[in-house]
Each structure stands twice: as C-alpha cells, then as structure tokens.
Length: 313
View (cartoon, rainbow, N blue to C red):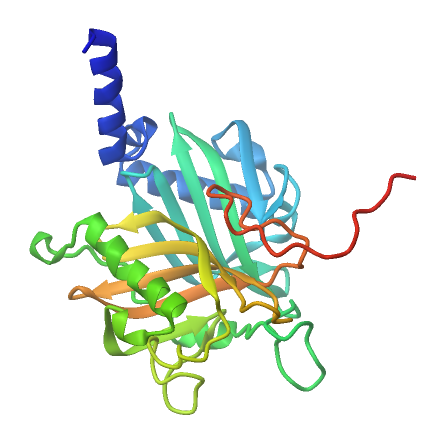
C-alpha cells in the first residue's frame, strides 16, 4: 500500500469515528455558544450578528430560506421552554422548545452545524397554530389540526439538561440503536421490539399522545394498525452522550393508497437506564409536491403529486 493510500485510509477511518474533521474544532462549549449566537441573531433580525459561513444554508419546514427572510423576520424571542443539546462528534447543536413570533408562538426544533468556527447549516422544524395536520387543514371547533399545544408543553417540558455521571452514560452507537428500535417498531408494526420503559410518553407538537384516554397507552402501543408503511430518511444529527439525549429526524410514509399526508418530524428521545423514557416531537405535514426532508439522505421525497408539471407561459 502506498504512503498516499495509507493516508487516505487513515483519514476515512478517522472520519468514521469522529464524524467530520471540522467537528474536532468545536467542542461542547463552542457549539453551545454558536447556537446561542445564532438564536440571538435571529431574534434581533440581524444575520450579520451570527458567524454564518459563506454559502450558509437554511431550511424552514424543508423550504430553503436566505438569511434575513423567514424566521429572521418573524421570531421575536425565545419562549417558555428552552432546551439545548450539543454533539461535538458530529459538530452539531440543536434547540428544542418554544419561540415567540410577536403575539403568537411556535414549537420548534432548530439544528445547526459548525465547521471551522462558522455556522454552515441551520434547519428548522416549526409547528404553528393553524397549520395543516394529519387530517388536513384545521376545521372550526375541532382544535389545532396539527395538535399544537404550547401551554401543555410549557407545563410539561422535557427534563432540564443534566450531565450524567460517566458510569451512567451509553456510547453514541448504543443510543442510536435504542432510538432506531422505535422506528423499527413502527415500520414492523410491532411495539415489542422497541427498547422503552413501560409508560413511555410521546408529546407531539405539545400534545400528549400516550396514557389514559389517549390514542396509545405508551410509545410502544397501537402500532399494529398504525397508518405508517415505513420510516424513511432516518437521521441522528445530534447525539448528546453526556445528557443521554438523541435528536432524530425522518419522514413517515403512509400505507399505499392512503390519502393521509406524510409528516416530517424531529423527535427528541430521552434515554434513561438504557431505555426510552420520553419522546418530544416538533413536526409538520408537507404538501404532496414538496421534496422532504431536503437534507441528505434524500430518500424521503415521495410520493409526489400526480398532477402534471406546470407549463411555461
């Protein structure tokens, strides 16, 4: 093996262990600071106040947005629920909670990537009042179609971030396997394969979905008949080993022939003693012709609309 090839193989092995080379340039404190600077810049409506890289890319519910547009105009403050997590291995950090948009609010996940001391990516998942939900647009007298409930989330937020003792921490690969078991349980319609505590809670856009009187007894129940064919485009961008928290993103693809729309979601998994204790989601329901998730891997971009493409005038 030539010296050049040995160097290439060593580099690939290093990236396989550590994510990206640039991730090594930004530790937990660096990532958290970058996230705070970014959020503060958004609130101030000043992209120049954040260390944005040349070619910085941002999406909001899968739509590309230039700096100064979208949330840069609408977000006026951080809300009652604020959680921050960092992953020095992947070079990414993320926020989950509520943001204020004037007199209104949104439940959000915000992910950023830091490379060479600059923010190269930002990805927003926003749930807002009045957005379409599982059964389409909101109907009078039926409440939010997308289960939007910031009041419940404020009263029942995720646990405050805590640094676990080293003896209680799981390796990132184990945390990802535990979280992935949830998606496998949905795809196989078999809750028994999910590695979770009995009574594990799932809160979707601020609404509790498990427990007495809810659609499911816990996060493993009711999967035999769930209208999901597969969990596509699975990603695990932030694995906070110190906190035992994993951010996962994917697309729920419905059963063939179902008129129910896809939904694109960010889910925060809180793992305790090697099992999922709770899940908090911020998700949206894209129109049929919107390519999602609009980040690699680009494997969730179906089904598209059956309507013909528009013709040029």
